[in-house]
Image (cartoon, rainbow, N blue to C red):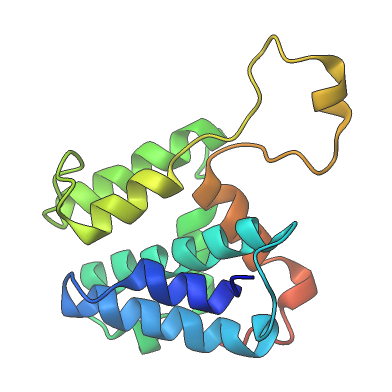
Length: 165
């Protein structure tokens, strides 16, 4: 049984920019009081994706603002994950990707730990258009890009009081 926080530590690895490592440390510290002891069953995969998305958001914002990830606020992360005026959910992944490119990441570089995690997070879990109706009726089915689904769940109101930015 893999615990969510252990999975996040594994995904963090030891490579990448100092801000990347600091963003993961901050994400795990924020999530520890909520997810200590929770495993990767059922919603744990979504929560793990949410933790990785949170680390990625902290990294992007910290690099763009020249701040330490510990200084990033919930409002800043919320703003990054929200649709901008006129956007759909489909517009959010390219926006994050353009920001990663602006930070110097080549999204085809499979040796870059930031890119490796991003490529896993941007996978769209939506069922195909021709999926049977039962799939669309199943409330436990994953929908949309893993990072967006995960970070929305991670920052959901249910965790607000315990997720102390």
